Amino acid sequence: MHRGVHALSLEATDLYEKSREHIAKFINTKNPSEVIFVRGTTEAINLVAYAWGLNNLAKGDEVLVSLMEHHSNIVPWEITAKQKGFTIKYANVHDDGTLDYEDFENKISKNTKLVGLSHVSNVTGTINDVKRITEAAHDQGALMLVDGAQSVPHMTVDVQKIDADFLAFSGHKMLGPTGIGVLYGRKEILEGMSPYEGGGEMIKDVSYNKSKGHCDLTWNELPYKFEAGTPNIAGAVGLSAAVSYLEEIGLDNVLSHEKELTEYATNRITECKKVTVYGTTDLSKKCGIIPFGVKGLSSHDVALFCDNFGIALRSGYHCAQPLHQIFKLESSARASFYLYNTKEEVDRFIEVLREFDQI
Amino acid sequence: MSTVADYVSRIEGTCGAGSDVIVVFKFDKKDEAVANILKKATLKNTIAGIIMELTYKDTSFRVYKTGKAIFRGIESKPKLMDLLAELLL
Image 1 (cartoon, rainbow over the protein chains, first blue to last red):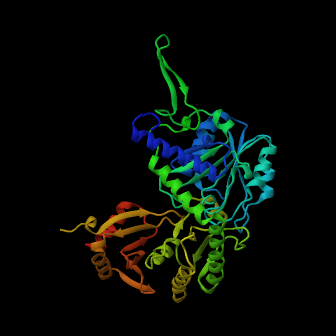
Image 2: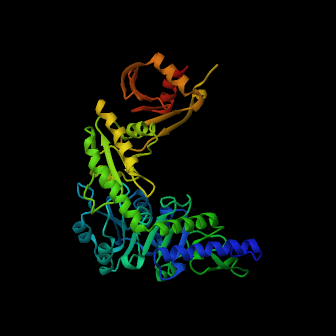
Image 3: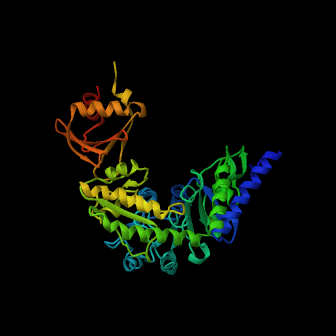
């Protein structure tokens, strides 16, 4: 791809680049070269932490994230902080799982170089006002990284409207294949960054300098500078197909369907005496996720029980241990809804949960 | 002679403060595995006919008709393997 001149190579290149253009349009970037294909949200954030963070952060600098972040927006910063000596600050989350905006904004200072925030919490479904936080970050000269893993699949996300400098999301959460995701980065920032990985594709020139005894390197242009090696061509094309499907249905319709199911399930779940719902139930602040627990059972018991009826629940920390510490929970079970779920399935889910009343 | 590996497909640690361990029995051996366990362990409670709460010696655990078992507070994998050997074989 990009390198071969035969028909199959050209066809693959064409499909791959058309996928990039399509996804760029989907999130409304100014330029398709601002879309970098990665393995998923985790790799996207790691790319920023390593390719930007290692070269731009030092002792005295601060990275600010919230306590509701997925581990993928905590761990890369903790690792690079140990290497570079910068400080990570954590903004508080209220007991109902909503962001403490005041605390967040108070913690942004002139020392803050990057702010990272989930657009939607993967545990509670809480929707964060990322535009508000972006404005506060930019006021202090900090960059804004939005973890869009839980928002891009469910609602219209326009990178120019939210004004993010980076946006990360995954294909497998939006009907696409596994192993493909996107890092959006503002062009001028990406241009100033060093590559994340080295190899083919990301390099323009590798010239052996006999007198110096090493190779002189010239990076490839964007976005290829960040796509070392043969890319996941099938994944990118598959993600584009998934985006076409979502566009055909309309993301506003997807979101309203999810909200309707969440409202219905949130109301009906109160019929289950042993069930406690965690986080806010204010539907104006959240989308299609209901975290809950069953009295006397671990979340894994609940998930295995529901599995018996063909209901797939996630259990555990959901890779968000700090948020569970705030909730004072060992773990939680999570019901999540998407465009393919129905009210009848919610009814069945409630029926199954009511079995716990017999305990 | 049977071994634990004849019955167990996978052993998965779970995330969460409790550090539960889920034992997944092989599909074609799950009924036999559950039957063997029920012969040796004491049935304390059944939830909706699906979850069986059991105890064996000092260990409490839950077995699911779908062929899975959850053990909590197991100190190490060798101890779990010893326990499974006693229950399954």
